Every structure is written in C-alpha cells, then in structure tokens.
Image (cartoon, rainbow, N blue to C red):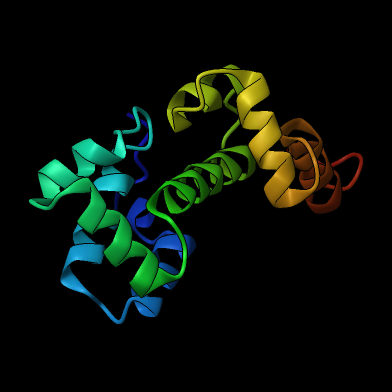
Amino acid sequence: GLAFGPASEQSRISLQLRQTAGGDALIVKILDLMQQNLEEPLLIRDIAQQAGVSPRKLERRFQQKTRTSPLAAYRKLRIEKARQLLLHTTLPLAEIVAATGFGSRSNLTEWFKREYKTSPLAFRKEYYADSHPAGSAA
C-alpha cells in the first residue's frame, strides 16, 4: 500500500467525474471502489458485483452520467496516481508500475504518453529540472 491517506481520496479525476455525475450514489460507489483498488485493479464485472448491479447496468449508468466508460475512467485514475507518485516520491518506475496496476513498464509508458504526451521518466526529469534549479538539493 502506497496510500497517501486523505490526499489519496482527493483525486482530481475522481472529483471531476463525481461532479459530472451530479453526485449519483452508484457512480460515487464505483469511483470509491476504483480508488481503493489502484494497485490491483478490479475487473469491471467485479466492481459491478461489489456495487450490487449488473456489469451492463454499471457500464450504461457510468457512460450516461460521466460521458466516459468505466474502463477509461479507471485507467485515468491509475495514470493520475502514477503522475502523483512521479512528482511526490523518488520511487523507481518499477514500483510505480506495481502501485498503479499497469503490469509492465511499457504498458504504463504507453498510457502515460497518451495522457501527458511524454514518458513517465521524462516527465519526472522535466518536473525536477523546472522546480529544482542546478545546484539546489532535490
């Protein structure tokens, strides 16, 4: 567990989806399940079962209320978590891969590049170059 405590629940993506869904109780429950299972992502059918609905109902309701699929939202939450870990920890990429459930470095890199237009390591390097000028301690 690499939970950050209360801050981990304040995901920007999750808050946006909750707002878009108008606080829909089922969507909130689904997003909570996703947030709690970033390291070892659940299958959508398992999330549906835990939320007490059919996978089809979960998919339809999520799409209708958030204008995105549950799978895409789950992936965005995991990418966001990887970004947070890159910015706020010195964890090696292999540990970030494990902490976000991407399974492999190449899988995380592919999805991270789609979202941020750069690789995870280039992102971290650029952030630290910008926020820690040469000669200062990192």
